[in-house]
Length: 343
Image 1: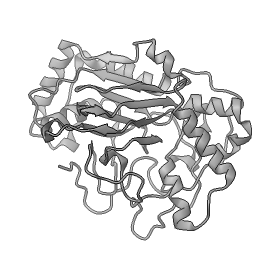
Image 2: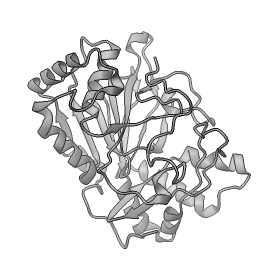
Image 3: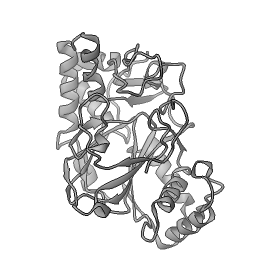
Image 4: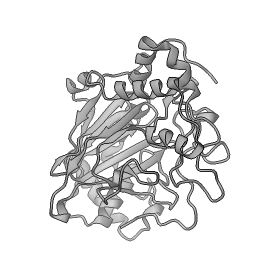
């Protein structure tokens, strides 16, 4: 495995207070661009959603904007907020088509779970966050910092919560740099990584713990990439009976402390029509707990897309996928027929 010598000094090594003083991370949909989106949705009204391609969903006035977004995600900060999606007047099906059509201009949508769901719904469904097969995005709890098993994750806000539910993003690159500065003795542990519990996403006959360690940071072809999901790591001792070492716990604790440090993290409230786009290899994200509206129609609801970017950064074999080298590097392999759009 390659090792990075020294610090990373590219645009992905930002600090939250710097973003708070800038506004170039926000892209606002202009009226003519909104009209293009509306016209494109009308073109694909009767098409199966998964069959919709870039060619089916032309966005001529957004071409330059989309190119800048893609560049910022891969070679810039790894974080963009698109503001002003034209959601009013659309039913859920049309909203999915709008979101999907925009997304395919940035990458290839991939499965988010073993059921083959291609669009996720982030909302409180009573899940008990922290239990083995529960997912935090289906709870109202505060979430730990993590990143997702894809190149780009998009979160489109349909309705914010009554209170709380703030989104928090931290540069994983900056976290790495702080390890180098503060605890260089733990950097080897970052490269060595951890076994992950698959939390019910394993394929039939597969052991629910990864047979290989997944590096927290991997360096290949000049790119530093991160994979961090503490819940998946901490469930492993419950299955194997092998406790985490003191060094491993120190590494996890420092990672969490750095991710949540006000001097590093960036907090924001997502409004209706906001689309947050994150490069999972250079950022980690979380959210605060929230209180929902009593009216079901107003309850917090975000739509999630996982995108692969085939022309994006190369990933080291031991890092590329939690299922091992015999599976495509990103996404979750479906078990049985796909049911792509849960109600």
